[in-house]
Image (cartoon, rainbow, N blue to C red; front, side, top):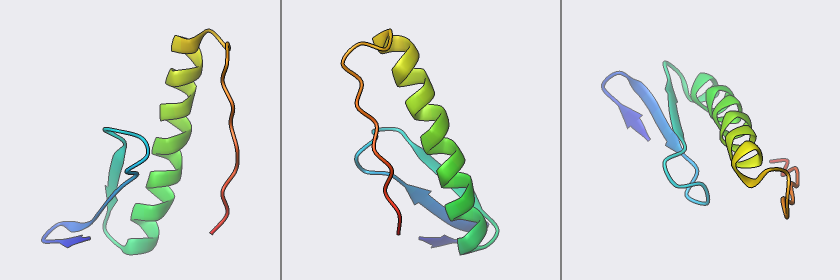
Length: 58
């Protein structure tokens, strides 16, 4: 979503996971990093138990 500062993006499937960037492309690249970090924290919290990770390509 365009804002006065650039673009803001979120991942509805991962509550609280959002990012931003000056351009749409930058915001999406930043979102990829945010998703990776989110999943790393989820993995740590789950203790690697019952964690299923899939890659989605757009």
